[in-house]
Length: 339
Image (cartoon, rainbow, N blue to C red; front, side, top):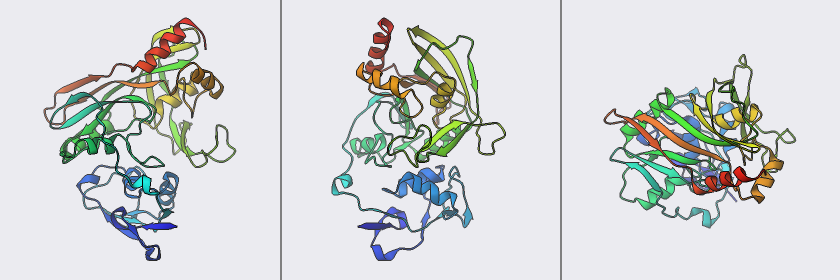
């Protein structure tokens, strides 16, 4: 059985297939078109959402739009009829409430230490994520929205806005590169001390069946690769690397990103020949299997430090999240033996 997504993402009866028009309200202001649709079209595969955007079937104010188009209050988004498999009853249950480690909180924003293995939001086969669990844990909160995202397997600092005005101001800082973002990454191999700047443009693509790096079930999955500078789809990406510590066959790095591209650190480090330990998309798959047997159950990447201007006071904020125990244990292990 299938269902038709209608206005505001509500299911319609199957014989009511039609074009739908969504009016962007305050909750959608500043969001990218792709993220807005992924939230509205629950259960629709991410690859299909990107396909209808690329084909021009999705229109914003009657004009074709790109996935990264930023929406404004009152924008009219045209969505073609979309069929998805009927969700199982279990998937319709609300997210369980969950409190996360709080790094900072006031009336405008909330900074949490996101654990690895938890998506930041539901979608693409994930029933719920951090934001849904936070909303369930704080039913009195009138507004809770993600300021930015982290990959599911990445731990570390995640900002959540508690006011619409805070969300727009913080997202503008991320877009205009006014934030300072430093990650900790544990990579395979001995990183050369001289290699401190990675300045390689990146390009997003969809995995094709039988392509290099394709795994079971990955067809149509979004990936990123290094591109040539004359590629019209390439985006500038700059990462600064500092060696923190070495161990036999591994290096612990501090990586400061000056741009915020999808999978930027993962692709930059892998393209340099030093993939992140445990990375299941861009890493060394044979080594990852050995690392799993040695106790590393996820990608060794952690959002360590974040600097930004407070959206209300303008004061410069500097937050830090210590590496979680699983990464500390992994590093203590490789210090003493090669994996």
